[in-house]
Image (cartoon, rainbow, N blue to C red):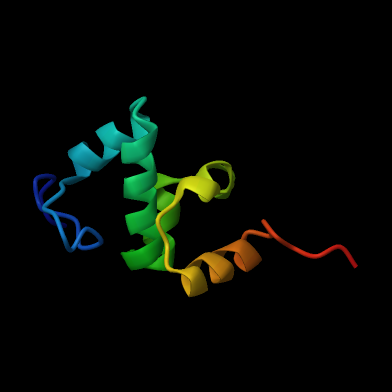
Length: 86
């Protein structure tokens, strides 16, 4: 297992460590949380995403996430955010 100061692979545009991510996710800055969760959904492997956030947390912050349209639509389907009523 790698040390806690190693940078996380799902932040390719910035060096971010596990303690830094945990602080962002626990913090009060909604913009930073949206940024971090956007990176998780874009770049992290499936199992890694859910180590940091719950599906309910993602649903709650979903409108503020920075995702490409196709990825946003895929996540909306997976999380049943825009599921049509049948």
